[in-house]
Amino acid sequence: MRVALAAWLVLSLSLLGATGAQGMCGDPPAAPSRSIPAPQLSPEERLSPHMPQSLRCDACHAIAFQIEEQLSKAEGKAGKKALKESDYIEVLERSCSQDWESYGVLELDGEKRLSGPGLPSQHPLSVLVSGGPWPSRLSKLCHGYVGEQGEAQIYSAHRRGSAALRQLLCHGDKGPCASQKERPDLPKALQNEL
Image (cartoon, rainbow, N blue to C red; front, side, top):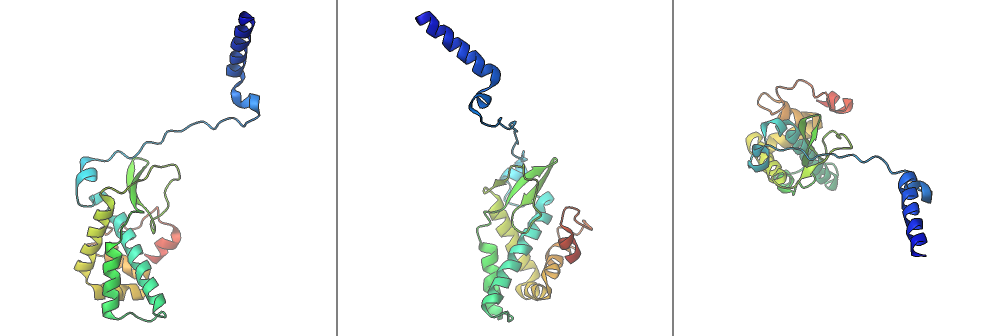
């Protein structure tokens, strides 16, 4: 009896192995697995308190987006009227002091890019490394832009439109995107605004 049971078990296992358990149970075959590695960050990208030069243009666009969102929201609460100086200063401070946790870095075709709200969507099969140094880097850079440009000038650019704000912060003579004529990965609608 034991020999028959052992033979039946060996035969059953070999049949399951030959045809696959999915086919035996009627389940669809499993999709081939893919391995997507996390971006390989350099020591500067991992440890420096500053935003790496290669990501500053993306960071500037993220900051401009967040400032635009926060100022527009505040104006909406005020009935679309221009904000008082004390109000837009407070909104800009709040914009720069937010947690920035929804941003991170990913690697696409060997190039590291910042990803998050207001930035072009990236390849769906990529690993985003968020948290860590990225939120504090974005906050520090945001405060730097506000200090360098001044609250009144930033708010004035916002009132002229999001393209004017991005031009002021990112594409001016000293902006982090100044050397880039056109961002080929931005959607056409965003390129037209620049």
